[in-house]
Image 1 (cartoon, helix red, strand yellow):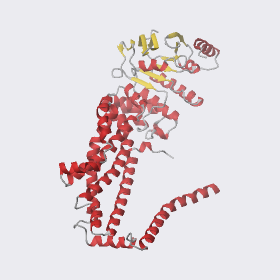
Image 2 (cartoon, helix red, strand yellow; image 1 turned 90 degrees about the horizontal axis):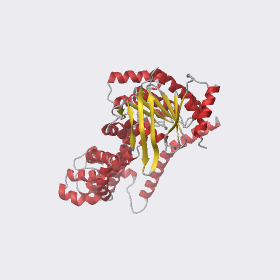
Image 3 (cartoon, rainbow over the protein chains, first blue to last red; image 1 turned 180 degrees about the vertical axis):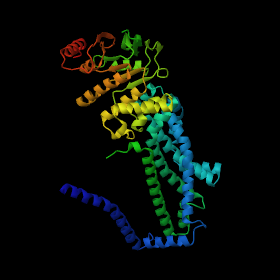
Image 4 (cartoon, rainbow over the protein chains, first blue to last red; image 1 turned 135 degrees about the horizontal axis):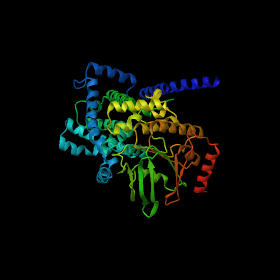
Amino acid sequence: MKQRLQITRYQILLNILPILSIVLFAGLWILVSSGEGHIIPSPGEVYDRAVRLFEKPINHVSLGGHIWASMKRVLNGLVFACLTGIPLGLLMGWSKTANSLLKPLFDLIRPIPALAWIPLMTLWFGIGESSKIALIYLGTLMPVLVNTYAGVKMIPQLNIDVARVFGASQLQIVKDIVMPSALSAIMAGIKTAVGTGWIVVLAAEMISADTGLGFMIIRGSNVADLALVIFAMLIIGLVGAFLSVLLTFAERKLCSWKIEIK
Amino acid sequence: MERRVKVKVEKLCKSFGDLKVIEDCSFQIYDGEFVCVVGPTGCGKTTFLNMLSSLLKPTKGAVLIDGEEAGPKKHNLSFIFQEPSAFPWLTVEENMAYGLRAKHKDKAYIKEQTEHMMELMGLGKYRRSYPKELSTSTEQKIVIGRAFAMNPDLLLMDEPYGQMDIKTRFYLEDEVIRIWKECQKTVVFITHNIEEAVYLAERVLILTNKPAKVKEEIIIPLPHPRNVEDPEFVRIRNYITDQIRWW
């Protein structure tokens, strides 16, 4: 009984701590912003700026419009990355020939940050949407591909042998055994890719764009509107957290067999 | 009664590089027979079974099923591995149906076979559960059910109960005998446990040390279910133990 009580208390504490950390963070923010030199706008100023944003949207695009603009770019790049990265990862994981042919190439390209491609992409695709999507594609392809590849490599030989004894063809093995076994690794790759895609889109928008959250930050910076910069940063954090929750949910739905029954 | 030859193994040899694992192994298995293969640890029992299932190609010689070279595309083969090998991402029902589905069997037939096996194995109430939610012995029952559902020409079992506790093992040994009697399938069962072999098999093949060949065949005329304390049972068990002597 006593033990149970302790556990409950501990659980209450675990539930309070996240709130506490946010409160402490806000307190620190207020403290710093009220100090001399006005290093950073106070939470109140950021709130006021946010309200004004709804009255007078930036570039005649609402906040939702800016979020969607960034998100759409990430999604476009990510879809292309999945459409090429997953099949390539499966191929490289499954076929030794394909692996020895393609791996050196990817090993060479992988360490190059997506942002290093900006000049080339701008030259080839201009400064419009397509160059941004191409950059996001380059940034998200590797995490998807590498995780798919690792997922295939980690499949227990036993599962493949079972299918082989039952007379399954190579194609059946890939579809019935490899795909479901590698699915959670692929999902992990997509999660990482969303993070990378988000970094790349902001950088791309800060270079040239008239919509998007990166554009909001650059606009704030250009007119010394730090409250706007901080508000955009907060939104970026919230959207990122939301995407992460969404993907975790999707992963649970798709890989329900993996979840431990307590 | 004359029994029909189901599996014919002719002068089977397997080497990995210079290492001869199996040399000149020849024997026959009759239709519907339950054969146990015993032999010293590491004598190549698993290699032997992997060739029967065509997971490995023999270096020389052949394995014929119904007079044709054995192959997973031509024949209905089932293999029960040492480790539990149910697919974790499929439910019990989907696992049971997997082999039949891989062979593109008719949907109605798959349903009928799966239902029949689930009933036989008492797994109906778990049909929508995932293997992870069940005990190891239940998982092994899924695998046994999946293997028999195939209506296999040849069912190969590679020390399937090696890692189980004694109670589970006794229980699953009786289960496999019960289903074998019901389905009348040809079974080759590998084990290092001599008591298990004498308890299950109609015939026991004793393999020699590496390179392995068949040292002796022993027919066990006792009816199932067998009594491990029966003096005849004990005599056969002791005899086989003497023939192996791996310690």
